[in-house]
Image 1: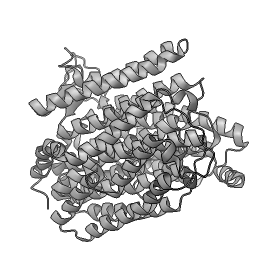
Image 2: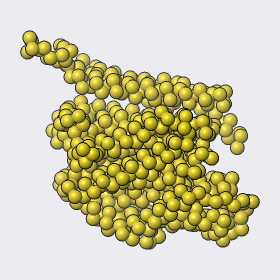
Image 3: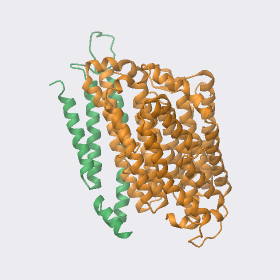
Image 4: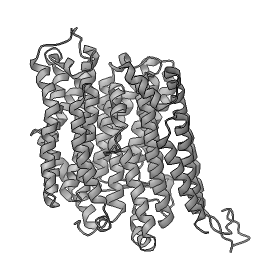
Length: 117
Length: 498
């Protein structure tokens, strides 16, 4: 049971990965991207978790207390910012592509492009 | 003060330049390109200073905020890093110089200030990746570089570039997601993110969790291979590099793909012990993929009609050479790989820039339409020819030197078939580059050509790049001597290689 979070993180990671590769719909690809990234964040949080650990605020009154590892959480904050900006940029591109082609389907776009040439 | 903080300042300078451009650029449009030129120039100067310090004092270390590792982030510059920094800063300076008068014609005037800002952000990210000695810090810079690079492709807002850009973005996010998962795994088994500490802790971690370590290595390698466009993960590259504006193509093909190779070098040679790597099927798969990449990239390049697509496929092949050098696990081949990173950066940016000029003046981008342009525009066509000959590997041009070292490496590592690969692929390169050169000078033009004056900045930058191709072909021993101790060190630490 200790490894439940790790296993789940990997399952979610692969789900996102699969969505990104298999769907032609660009919006779904971006959703897949976010699922994949959430899995990584879950994985990192799980690494930092210590059983019965407290929030890592060092208090002198209670020296024997165990703390969770704060570093992965700090990393995730950065990771989330990165992921949000990538998502925003990708969605912006999708909007512009939709204005040009009237569809968000990659296969459709490829077909229309090859007809144009 | 600058001397003590030179490394973080070098990364910061382009980023600050980018903010400055965005602040003032909307009001004073002509200021943007001057700021970009000055910033890249200053960055280049600072990188030269770093190289000078490294060659005098050996490896430089810097602890961000004064926090020593493993708690803080560490920057590190050894001779290999310094050489890569020189490559990145130098080439991007000459690309900006080239684009000084040309970019305003090519890019929509509404977005041109943003273009310069993105360019500088990308440069800062590239330098950050190379300098960083901390895996998570490297990841953040990796993401900055992938967003900036995808934006540089799409900046003009035309349909093809936009489509290529989203494909690029999706693939490189897949890659960096996989890399981050790998980094998380490494942190899980060792508790460190600093490269040197990781290297120290890995043998023990491998003893306790062999499967996890193997999986993280696989994820990191695959993730980096996607971003570096190793065959068969290169599918995004030809579209992205082929449809981007000239200066973007030059920097994307010349530099951005290379930076991931720098990460792979750090990963394979500094973090994972070499005797451990040789027990894995990693070497075999790297070599096979590299060889396939070299051949299939070249064959696809031969089949292209569009000149920029052809150059993009040629990049796929050239990346194969670099991976070949890394995969052979021998000193000479490593030297060859690092040299080729630099040589290809110079050659490919020169090719893309000269082709960009020719496309701009002739208005056509098919290979057949380049015929006869050499008589009207000698400097771009000479630059193209020098780049092409260097790609084929004609001595004394720099492309020959890197292939020579790769060949020596293949001998040293006792992988003789790869000599044949090198020879055959040079022939293939000749197949698609030489007809263009010959037609460029000796055939009759197929299109009506109006004569334009090639702007001064573009001429200077092309001439410098041509000069660099000759210089580093003739005096390659300077670089090799500079790199040799570090390369030897990489192999000595882990028991002298194979």
